[in-house]
Length: 90
Ligand SMILES: [Zn+2]
Image (cartoon, rainbow, N blue to C red):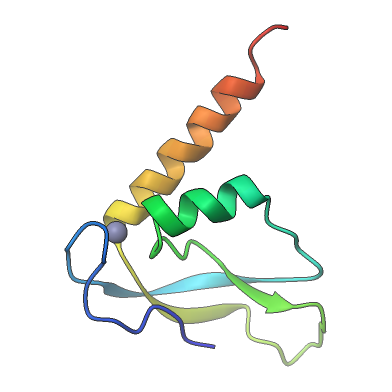
């Protein structure tokens, strides 16, 4: 499952680089807020790939994807914002 096959990032206008990322198996539901932020702010982060919920020993643990390093940074910043926000006292 290769994703992000375009040559450059539509948000950051930088070339995508090929990188191996971990594949996460299992029934993983990404939060809607994450999906929305990903679509708008870091569409080519690809810090992991969802491998589906069928787990077998022959499944690859790593997959090559084409990703954008600035998207990675944006994703990390977004996650940090989220953690900061949720750790605020009520
Ligand atoms: Zn990008």
